[in-house]
Length: 395
Ligand code: PXP
Image (cartoon, rainbow, N blue to C red):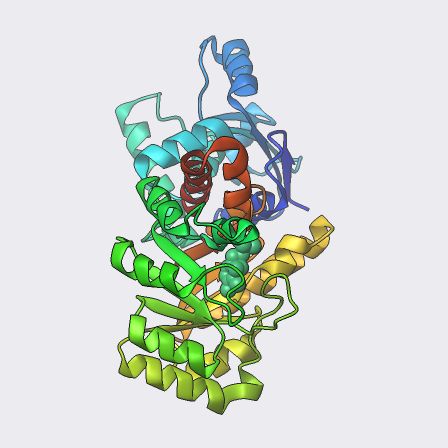
């Protein structure tokens, strides 16, 4: 394998795969597919000691290149070995720089790999102004050829406050109030509030939804089954959008996505009624391309991709497979003109990669945030998740 990625920062296989893919493309664009390149992802502490040792600079830097041989700049004269050398990147610095420049982390890493590779190939921007210009031109050419898309818009975070109502209902009294919770979430940066009004009213009550309609400043997304009584309620309240979900009385939480294919005409009628009242509809579906296509067929505006199987995966391999299903379903939905949200089971450990999928607009997260709030307070729990979404959405 021409590109070896060593991750000393422990950032997980998704990032490593992206880095490997980009580095391999770079080698192809430079006609170096016969050569081996090693990318080391590390942190500020390690790169500081390398910077001190090899460049006598006592500070972290973003990238250092270590050519296998000083003669690599003469590649066109033919080399007897196949090693290009090592490019060491500090993910700490790369992330900070990406954040401040509002760049995707992956794009930043591609810039650093390109810069590092050109140094290995003998380019040196510090040698002279003309050399700096030559290197900069080659960097721009390669980055352009990598054709990496830059994210236009951040993924947003909508918070499901059902669990606050669950606690209230356990006592049958007036607190804690999900309406207050929604306001705190918004003040802490939530970009939407989600509530599920179940037929059995086990957590959210009609009164909650009515008040939320009056008080939510961002966007109220009403999750619901397609039962007539609830449809009529939604048509009366007019939330900013509704998300249709399958609902079973015996389930603890929404268990799977809607089978849109087998219920096309029933769902299409509900969508039509909502659209008549200017309420956009999202369909909560499993990451399945046929369900995506059926959702478009019956006039949905959004799909919400069920991330539960990804969240419940018990091995990295399985999680990766589930991730790829979500990524492909989101890409297909986006491509055919649907807007794409995702949610279910997302927490502080598994949200990052999902937030990094550029075609997903919004994540709907409830249980993990409310659970953390018990210990850290709701505002802090929202801020912590916002940071994860924001940082990952820059990937
Ligand atoms: N999206 C949908 C459609 C849901 O039914 C739920 C659970 O209420 C969520 C997102 C949020 O899931 P969680 O509470 O696991 O974050």
